Image 1 (tube, rainbow, N blue to C red):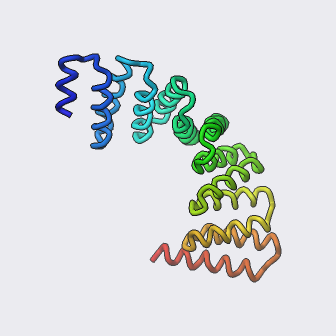
Image 2: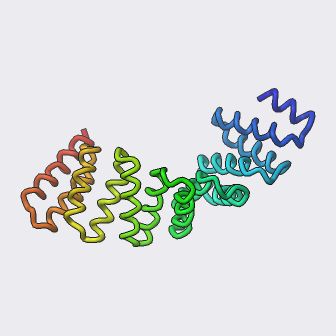
Length: 220
């Protein structure tokens, strides 16, 4: 840090030194200082997308959503082929409850990197909020296929299938969720709901009993 500060003192417009100083501040969790350093790097060299992206990442950690959106958008303008800018932009837009914009960002991220499960999952979340159930279900299926062990994609898929009244598929999905995370009572509750719709009373009772057992474990 001292090395870069000395370099900046000699040559204040040395954008790379500000950038590297920002990196060091970020590593040390000095986020306010990192933001200042990245903004100075941008001031002296505003057309390097990496400066904007790194600034956005810190703003994301600080939960400064609106500022992060602006920084990510600037990063996508300067480098429209970097998928992580769109993915992170979509995540922040979800925080701001801008569902349509979040979906657009994640679709672009998927175009650039179709093998990352997180973009499909985030897209599913945005589409779920938009009540576009079929598209949301398809997104969650893709996410689950790419990362079968991330149980949230399967759980959210189950929630979507309930909205679509696809009870048999919901049962299969929630059973998968229960395998991935047997101590998560909410999946058993939803499984019980699906069994009730199918008039499978005994299975529903077993599922609801597992909900009760799960809550007991949580409280203990």
